[in-house]
Image (cartoon, rainbow, N blue to C red; front, side, top):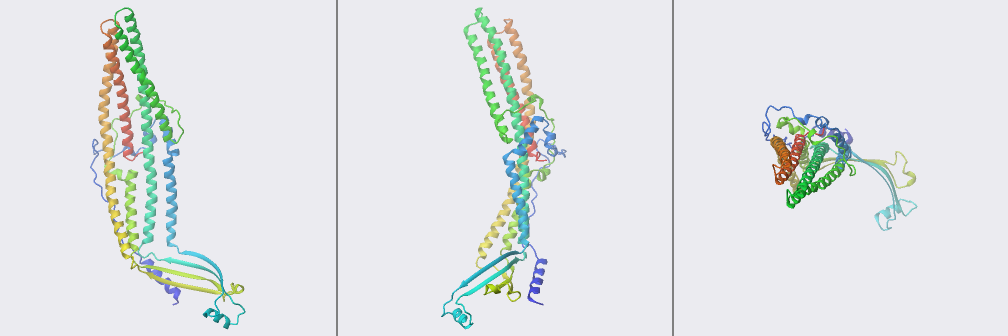
Length: 470
């Protein structure tokens, strides 16, 4: 059996017997409750399974979300990260293939007449004082994946690629929630602006009556001044709300990747509604549904692979090298085949010695990093459960708060109407009217805020459950 066949047989045996020297740590079982707080264990379905277009049904809101998914710069960067990771995954697969290089060289030297080369040149009866060398050869180098180092590199690259896809999903879930919440805030400001404008009209009517009474000598100038102050306080709110609307529109347009401009709204705040009972599903489902949890799980795959790579570095490495081509000390004979052909095949086993402590340290650090990844995974799951539970509590309590606030607004509206009638008939003084109008203004503004907070809590529940990327 010739030398080349021996090396081929040795490589085949080593490849077939290749093993991974490290043992992977499996994804830990996260501590999960049987049901989310403020939810029931019978919720097996989840709103997160609903595509976002079926959950957020407002047509203008859907246009904004569509634009953000395509044009938002964070989303575009995430897509570029995916493209980069795809290239790295493809590149790592080439680690199994030998590296091949082409080398073409030509050299000339004039040795000393008293040197061994110079004496040999003169004894060769060659009419030249120079030594020339012309060479063209292919070199090949290959390392056997005995300890699974390359296999672990592939696993790490694949997990990193999958992490970028999960990162894109996470960005999209945040975009869907952020755009919807920004849109609801705009509807709230619209409602509050309308409330302020209506209150100004109501105050104008009251002020006209008080001025007529002042002219008739029925009230003092103090009554006129207090009515004017009440009307001015309501009027002052209008430019504030108009400013906030413009700022929110600009911010929302930028979030969607567009230049600042107006945003069309075809619905009012009162026309946006969700069901009172929104199923959250089982906590165990968020492990497979939430992109950040999946990314944390993939991080453990990378940590496992890094442990294997670092441990493999401590073991002997089998390298096979070969080189072949043409060589001649005369340019005219360079390609004189087969006389100018040459070939070299060699194999080596390299065992690190003096730097073994450094490799051992790297291996121990990789194991600690893996333990940290396990902790981070558990923390991510815990945070996810907490976010869902917080959103459920907000939705529940804000619903109760909204009902109370709506009843209060209804009561104060009736009180304001009664105060106006009594005032016109001389059975109530101006202070009672002004107080009633101020109270109804504040209660209507507060009701709009509570409604919006509840809508935002619904959007946050949808995001925290892992909805929005489908």
